[in-house]
Image 1 (spheres, rainbow, N blue to C red):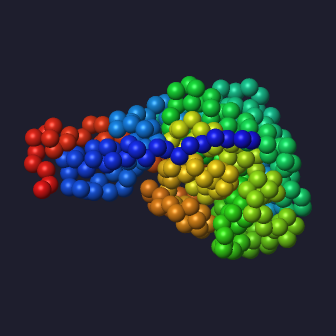
Image 2: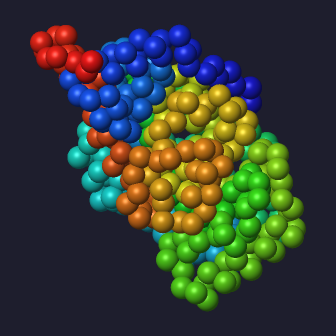
Image 3: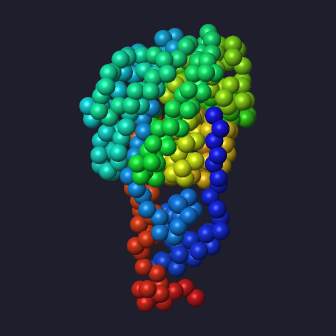
Length: 345
C-alpha cells in the first residue's frame, strides 16, 4: 500500500506561537495545553482550528494464539464484547456519549457472524488469525487487504467531514500480539519487559504467556521490517488500524492514540511513514508495562496517566476534552490587547 503523508508546514508556527503567547496569561502558564493547541493549529494549518465530527473507530478481531492460553479470557469474549458495544453498554459507549463522539465498530476478523447491524462495519478478512506460535498470523495478501480497508475507512470518515479520529480495539489475545510487535520494532527491548498481564493474568498465567511468546519468536524471529512483523505476529484489527492511521494522516486528520495495543499499531504505521507522528495525540500512559517503552521509543510524553488498561479507545475518549480545551483556549481566550490588560514587559 502506497501512502503519501506530508508533515505539517512549519511556516505558520511563529504566528500560532504569538497568538498563544499574547493570551491573557503568563507565558507558558497553560503548560501542555499550549503545546497541544500549537500542535492542532499546525495540523490544521490555521490559527483558528476546529474539531469537526470527532469519531472513535474500534477495530475488533480474534487471534489464533488465544486458544493457546495467552489471555485470561476465552476467545468468545471478543464477539460478546462487540455485541456489548453494539448494545451501547461498554465503557467506550459511555465515554463516547459523554464526550459527544461518534462511534463505529469494525469487524476486522472476529470469529462470529454478526450479520448486518447498525453501528457495525463488516470488514472481516478472515474469522481470526492463525496461531502465531506455530505459523505466521496472516498471509501477506491478508495483511495488505487489512491495510487497504483501514485506509479506505479513514478516507470515508474524512469525506464525511470528520477531522479528529480516535482509535480503539477489541480482541482477546491482542496484548500478546502487541507485545511481539513492540519487541520487534523497539530496539533494545526485552520480551519479558514488553509482556504484561493483559486482561489480568496471575503470576502463573503471565509466566505461561511469556513462555508462549518466546516460542513464537523462536519460530518467527525478531522481525525489524514492520510489515513482516505484522504478518508474523499481528491481528487483523491491528493491521486494519495501521491502514486507518496512515489514511487519516494522509487526510491531515488529528489522530487520538489510545493505549498499548493501539500504540503497537502506531509503531508499525510510524515505521512505514514517520511523517504521521505530528498528527498524533497520545492520550495516556497505559498500566501495561510495554507502553512506556513504546512511548519512549517514539519520544512521546502522553497527556494523562490514569493507570488504564482497558483498551476499546477509552483513553482516547477521555483525552478528548483536553483537545477541546486546547482548541477553545486558542479561539476564545482574550489577548492582552483585546482585553485591555497590560501584558508582560
